[in-house]
Length: 449
Image 1 (spheres, rainbow, N blue to C red):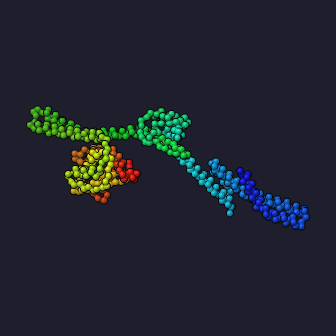
Image 2: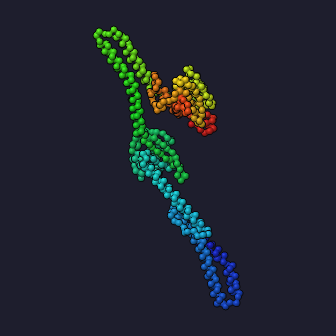
Image 3: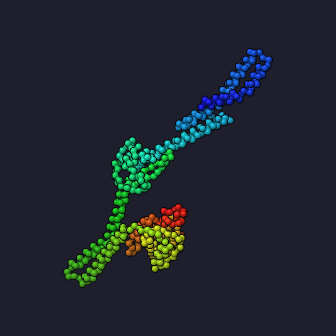
């Protein structure tokens, strides 16, 4: 193919000089010249003509061969070869210059890809999770050191194995979850994350296994420590005075003769013991209530009716209702009513300290509903302990109201937050909940949760 192309170039160069040669030979052979001059001149003209044709062919074919060699090197992945320098007004040289620039660009891109791949492999080796990549046939194509340690085999014995033979086929089902499994390299509770990616247009699966045993045990230990600290504090608050008063009553009974007012002292001491026992019983009841919160039973709830019903239940002070959009959510009406009543109750108690007002309303943020309760009270002095169980600044308070409200909100897939108002006194409680999945606005906007 290349020889045929060069032959065409040569024939074109020869043809371009044919008219001039023909005229010259015609003048030479029709003129009054000797045969020796005619044959000698003819040989010289033909030789020059062929030399010119070969020179033209080389001028065109040589750069084309250079371009072909450069493109072949680029195709083979060798980007280090460059063509000759470009001469002024050289069209083929400009083509060569563009090929050189393309080779330099591809060389930089290849170097960047190699560096990124090396960094990725280094990160995969250092992170403390097991990573596996499977192709469309569920055969393992990539594994890091964490995966080798988990399966108890080196990479050479793992690559090419199927997910089923490795015992990981059930891990590829689903997106994100936790599971309890035993592997050759360890057992416990694992966080499983499975996702898809494409390589060469072919879908692959990426599997990440994270050992949750250590973090869960640490969190469990911290939870037990917090629980024991709270229970110990409350029990000591009740048992210390009970022990003291019981000792005092024992000293009275041991006296001989008994003092004249011993009955009054006995009754007073027994009343205190009974009061502390009631307080301890209320505390344990509050803890049981907090620990045994039932799962919400969801059904369509009209937000406006819910808010108005909760506001009307507050008899100590009028609560101003700020109307919002007509909206229905999927929730447990009884539990949400308990949350809103508690928030309104707290707001009224705060507002009474400053003779301020209380307002309630609701607004929509695309796929989320916000029910807010605002008061004009003194505000929150310390927000760090708002959701600490059994922490309270109210006389006779249980310290579980806001904790219970937040648990109910999170059980509905929402959140609860309390913040001081900006630029004015008081604070605002915001209950954020997902909108009903069948809500027309949410469906049309594609923002359902």
